[in-house]
Figure 1: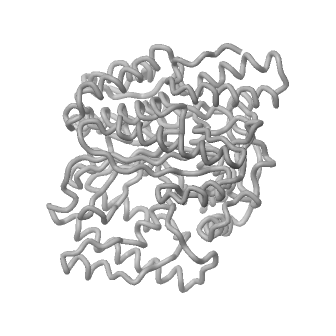
Figure 2: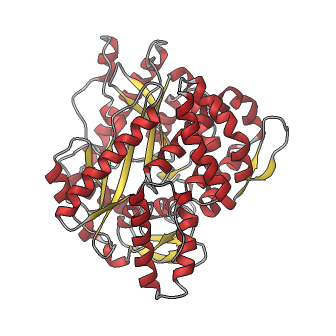
Figure 3: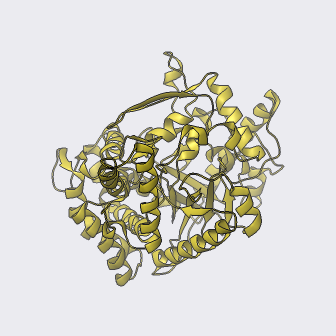
Length: 494
């Protein structure tokens, strides 16, 4: 979503021309994928981290443009709301990519902290900040860039009425909201993994299957507007806060733009891109003069500008990415993980995610007949709701029937398979041990960001008002986060 645009209003002709360009882009993509040499190359890894900016009282602080302008860093990007920023990390290759990305995260957070301090702010990686209130949201906090105004206007226009947010939990929340800014409450750690096009379907299906496991392990968003909701409330909030569908019979047949997917991928990445074109109306019909088919016919790699832009406005939890750089390639963008708690936690979760994808991939076509896609989708939302206490439907490599099993038990069983998967793609043994040991300790303690926040909240609320509880909770989280220790080592004393 970082591409700059100049317009906020578009005509019917803009949408017509853009839609035609999307079809042209798809035709060119099909040609590229038919070339057996396209996208070949070693695995590479990348990441994007979204963070909150907070003030001295641990409330959101709307100064993202000040930090952005002061740093003038091409890897830094503005986000939808003024109290968020995103940092994009350089791709990592070789046998220690996770340590490389961790070092980049630590350096970026230090740089952002130093800049934020100049404006009375602090940087906090967390899925949803506990101190967020309704007064922190609304049109006044949308970052003043054409792209975000166009996005907000386009989604609101398609819906035609207020958005409905209805999330169950310990303190259920039901509200309506006139704009898309509740989406800005969600900050994430998005991990990119380059895979060969011929392996994309198996890699994508493996990612879909194991996403509930990683989501439960990494949950870090148990509150929103002072309500204790899901362990990973971002999953429900993101979907509902920009859902342009209304509740009549016809409109509900339209799939949400924030989604887990529509079925197992049977052939290759083309099907996912084509779904995006045919199922979702464009929001940002900005075109360029490239003729993608001519580029392919001339042996060049097209940017597929329109397809890439359109795909960036469809928020699948596991998303295909086309990139024309480095001779052109495909990536898996793993989007379900929240920001935080620390760089160690985030990178450990990412390492386990990649390890599970690679470990399960050789067996994926054996497993898929035993787990209909709707079961996998249900697992994902159950994991978001219940975190490490989730029980999901799991096929198992040895059993022929689905079984209801605790997620913690499944993860503990699969850790050796994840280690094998990482070793198979050339990750160093000490790198594997470092990050999978953190995952193992998180499982043993059953203490991730969500459980830590809820434990501290429960103790604080016995002594303080809810407002003070949320403030102290956020301060405690900030202090522990600054220590750099993984969350399972954080103190819960109040």
